[in-house]
Length: 160
Image 1 (spheres, one colour):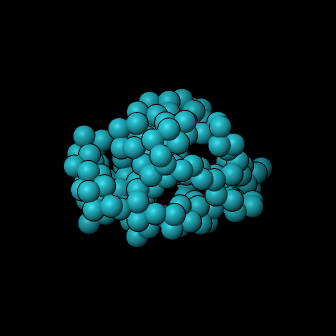
Image 2 (image 1 turned 90 degrees about the horizontal axis):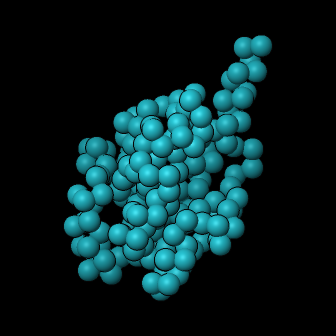
């Protein structure tokens, strides 16, 4: 079941250790993934191809609200985590409530940290830690014209 790929951080750690012992290259990325669209799918597929196992840090509802405002998320964390876990290219989903995934990154110590190319590497949370521990930080080109905010705006404008 897809819910078997959704973890609390403490429950994810034994699996991460197993992957590391098996010399699996672990990729980590994170985000809200509120309204899933082509841009998300393209990004996550490309992220997964950088290694063997993709761990996705997913913002909790409270975290999304703090980042995006009171009207977000549109889709609750249970549904978002189930949708993310349903993708074959996502190996594990872990929710986080903190402002950034810094703690998760420092605990799992991924081989590769990934964000979209709307971030400069020096501004990616955890990049310094991953690089200092022999890992790599990569950015992935985003699909032009796709963003949750643009989709929400389009929906709002269609009712005007």
